[in-house]
Length: 263
Image 1 (cartoon, one colour):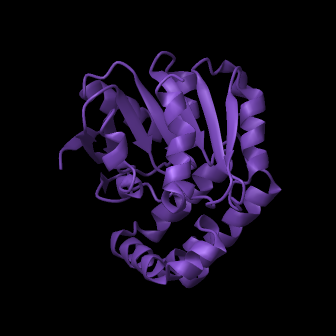
Image 2: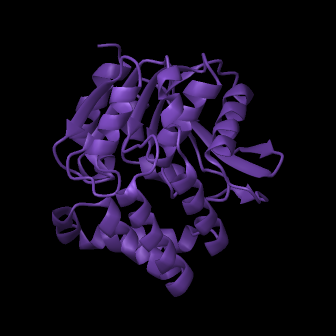
């Protein structure tokens, strides 16, 4: 896998398919593998750009200070490296924060923006969820942190019906886990992220999508995003939790593809 040299590390990336460029930006876990179930479909119509965030997955990180702005700068550098003047973007959770920064700080970079399971700034529920996750991380360790992760990402029925998948997700996360200090710094990074005052600056056509049963970034946070971004549209996927692109991929694609295709 090719690597992009950055001032504080190396960023792994890949491009799959042909067509208009579409960047997929993962959530807090940061790994491009999050999108593996959608890439075969999306790459039929788009050149899909994937990368692992710095300090996650297969990256080689020397990053000391973590911020959403640094993640956005990484993606901007990757697009420049690929000769891609502009692209569309689907950002999940932390990736939705990256998408907001790109739209606000790098005007003209994005053709279309999908904010999936996102937020403009934390509220008490959001902050409490990540306080609990951070406490598990620091007091019980990375394996315990990975073990509770599915409870925030997936609906109870999906977990009950897919115990083998859940076990594999936990095992894969254990195998690829960043250092606990990096995970904690990334949690602090997203709890600190608040761009409510700048939502009105986004001029990129924006589509906001969330599952109705998302308990980590509930629909009211997406409603706030859609209300604050000029011309943004909001859609709720009926079911699927915070990771509905994995648990309800057909519904997710049926929701976002018409927007990306211009309909």
